[in-house]
Image (cartoon, rainbow, N blue to C red; front, side, top):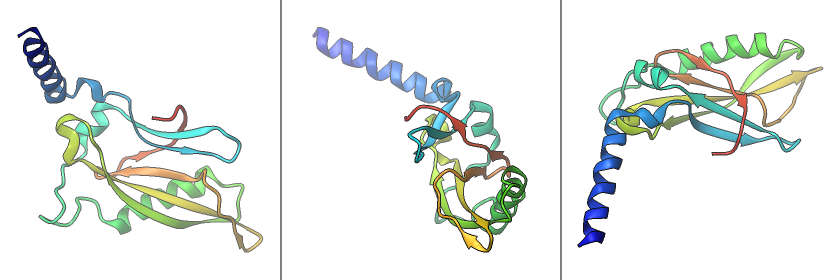
Length: 145
């Protein structure tokens, strides 16, 4: 009986946490290990998650188009990585968050390749997230999740 009661308490407690999204603050949504062993992470606050519109695949187009996400990302990357001759989009991922009621929130990860002397460099440390609200989230040095 105690085991059943303990399991019931655990389910109720986890449901309450899931419902109020309180554990979603400063959620690491993506992490990438760099060549030097350091880690870059994309971290979202609860406010960022809740202010980004919901989207359910298959019901409509995403609230923020790929073209707009690329424009936002490239504008940031060209300023952030201005030491390079140019910056090109290498890859775009569309990913869901997985945090409480925010699970219908999606974001893009835009990967960039710097260009030096006409040569495209393929490195792992040049990326950012673009939320469906149009907000850009820069990577921060952090821990694996």
